[in-house]
Image (tube, rainbow, N blue to C red; front, top):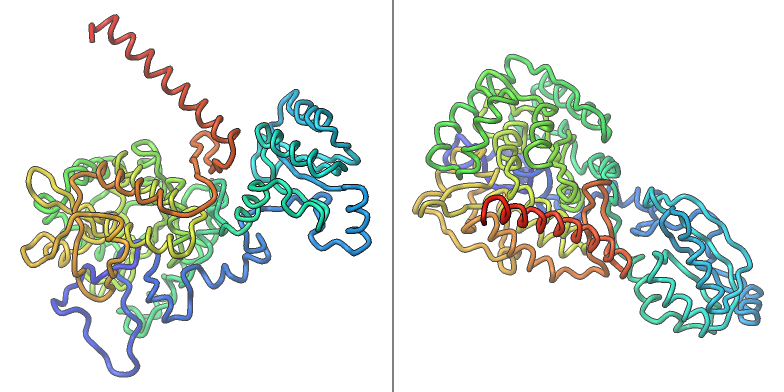
Length: 524
């Protein structure tokens, strides 16, 4: 699902122009995302306008979630300022593991640094289920508090702190600057259930058809699209994806697309695609006379690559769509294009999702490549998100690779478009090596074939290049996907990094043990 170019078109010269006002550019099958130009014409920015209104209500427009107990007053009265100057009163909120002895160790630091505790409260963390958040009122000198923070941050996660104004203006040095920068990071989901917020922030619903849409005047089709919107908007994480009873007309439309595309795959699709398509036929019912159910597809992907899919009602912003990839979750439409023109669709439909994206998402290396683009987007600026989205567009949507000395397609926009699939592998297409640093500035075309396609020698090569590119993204932390809790850990201090290192040590121990046994029993 992305901003896309002309896909699955039957007309060689593109859609016919109609009279009246200039139509909105046709969004072609690609990810349920964007074109920034497209949405700017609709008065929408990079992120959902709907979310702009919700941010203040849900998160204050910031990533940080402030504790609800005894909030640190950011606008103290003159009297409170005078009192804090005289007594050196301050407050700190930190989180630590909910384990025996952890709080005792933290409080011992207060004693060692001669920081007097006036009041302390605790509650279960709303951010990390296994941690406890501690609120502490204390009084001490600037030097004592500074030393406390320096030692405390090695054992706990400091969420926020407040110092007497105009007295400790440089308190905690980089620690305070870091907290300030962290509070300015755009909100992103830190656990998989929060993807409900992303998937429900729809920029344009699938039932809102433009005047030049093939189904614009078909009231029956419009009602059918509303049904799919309601199904997607009612879906919540953890629920089974509802079974859809597709109409005979929808199945026939799918059948036309399936039949024509499968003729091209043996000579145009990459080997990973060709390997997985028969498996989808066997396990998910991929057939000309049957539209696969998303629940069956999701269960299959979970077993093969760890990906899952969830229904979505319409276009998502780049930020929200890429956030799903970070959790190995792919947002899929369930509606089918209009039957009067089965080889053309102005927006991504289930034919594009199931035939273009799913077979490659079943490949572990491709799945990891997709996830790493998503992880790089979390907390990134709008500018960096747009660059990542463009790289996504020219790889996962319209990417080419070299196999056995031949060009092959792995991009979903190509693999679901008869016309552009033929064009991209012909002598007429301009092809360049994939380089994220330059690719991110390439214009993404909406109504025509792309001016240039980008090729990689392998998914592994593309992934390594994206990893290097991700290092240029400016954010005050790194992220780590925790597959056990299906959450995002922020790597922003020594303790959080230590947790990751412990996981790596465990993995390395397993690898070393396996190598030892291979040497003993196999002589390798």
